[in-house]
Amino acid sequence: MSPESAGLAVKAGYTNVKVYLKGVPAWKKSGRNVVASTKHVKDGNIVLVDLRPTSEYKQGHIPRAYSVPLEDMEDLEDDLPASMAAPVVLYGTGDDKAYKFVKKLGYKTTSIYQGGVDAWVASGNQLSTDAAPEEITWKRILGKGEVTVAAFNKVADGEAPGGVILDVRTKDEAAEGMFDNAIHVPLDELQAKMNEIPKDKEVMIHCSTGARAEMAYKELKAAGFNAYYLVADVECDEDGCETAEE
Amino acid sequence: MKKKMLKKFIPFMVCASFFVSGCQQTGQNAAADQAMKVESVVKAQGNVYKGKVAGVSNKAKTISITVGKGDAAKTMMVKFNDQTKGMEHAAKGEAAIIKYEVIGTDKIAVEVKPKLAKLPEGTTEVDTEYLANLVSQGTEKGNYFLVDSRPGSRFHEGTIPTSVSIPVPKIKGEGALAVLPKDKNIQLVFYCGGPT
Image (cartoon, rainbow over all chains, first blue to last red; front, side, top):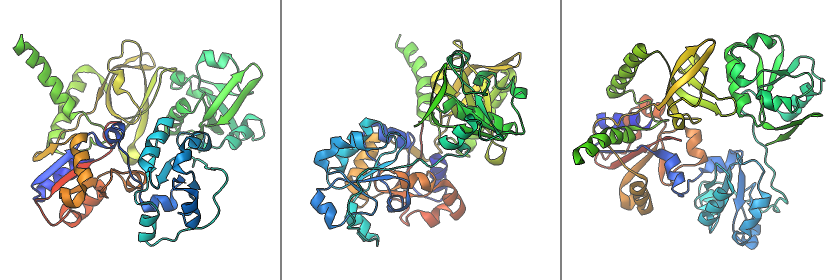
């Protein structure tokens, strides 16, 4: 992408054109932070954290922000959502330090809102004086083709006759236990055994986390199936399987 | 001895400096040449998928790769085994070229290679340290213009400080002169999603 833009700049007569080929992943990997835009802080499905002392938070904070003063930073380990996919946006003095801490915890899309409340007000937004929410709540927005745990369970429990469960785990994994009435086709045999999967039903695909289910979903979609996939931890034994949201 | 070393190293360095995915759609002639070379290799040696790796499962020993663009995009599946070369390049989100052979109903990956991108003529590559030094000076003192070429949504969720968002379709649609600074001698730095 960027080399193409750089090429256009050269053609337009710009004389000093450089490309940072390694891009954002290398920037993040070097431990440097990335910054979120005001739009993202306003509308994004994020966990916004105000790192300032409680007294400053009370005087006015960005709407939706949780209050976790920098000195209590370690609390974030317990307070942040279990899913490492939750985008955490930090602001206030010490945001750099907190960024490193949160990254280390494993949150993949952590960022800083540079300038904090000042930047927020400067872009024409109001501060809030609402009391701090007691708990951090955050819900992942489902990806394309993803099914909710609730909808999946309905099919697994036999309460949705229009649906069928497809288990794409390996033979060894399936031998430990499966959902009742699930069809089992290991991901690597999917191509060869597509005729075993009903075309007239909603096919709910699962594996043990969601990675293989997503791959199978793309495969079945391309072949014209009405398929969905589950992103959740699935654990099975002889009594059946249990799902836990990521 | 020395000569030998050099011979070995040059191709490696050339490859390494061009290795990049997520930035691969250069539309440059150079890239097209490269693609044509790959194409001819393909014909001689068998089947190949080129595209973005959509997923890798070590348990199922399967790679899925998205080939084609837009509505024509399709996800293909190939198996891999202990003989498959270059599995380090089969990582989700990376642009790759997978050479495979058909055995029965299975497609088995023989080799996975990163899809290459070339720097357009008249541009130079910069590294993280270089860019970090610029960013620490700020746009005014550093007299630079840093462009995030990724889609706007990616820019909003987290960008390199002091960047301006100009997605590739925007600069293509409106023209470089309309979206870049007036000063043609200003230092421009472009970046995108790079290799993941």
